[in-house]
Length: 152
Image (cartoon, rainbow, N blue to C red; front, side, top):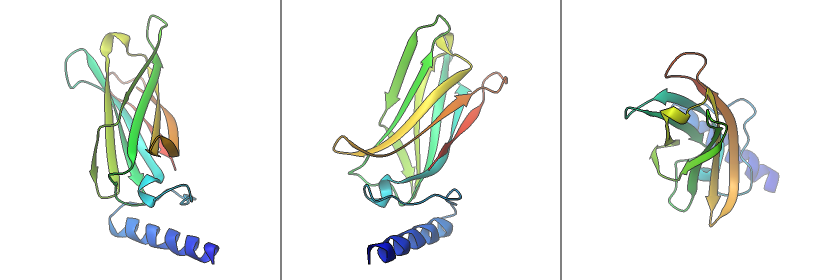
């Protein structure tokens, strides 16, 4: 019975994602740790100059198995080593959401900006982590822009 429900839930989630114009990553499955709105199917990160002078912004766009829900905390944490060798960390739980798409962004000082940062995204309910994904986001040698991919 539980396997049938899990398969039906996955099929419905994939069908809804297809209707909304998003495509789950190949092999993505919905785990049983929490609601579908906490399930990260995949996403991408970008690392660009601005918006303010002297800053760089790390933005993460996630695709969830269901639209974002109020009881889930979505977090982006970016860690990096500054150009002077100091470990640094910045995070946010502020996000914007449209359907199954969630976007989070943090800003770091340009003077500290290395070529690569490490992004970790999590979903949690009452401080219990339900899902996470991480990636290195780099500039790719092009001043002001670069990216990385999150896996579900």
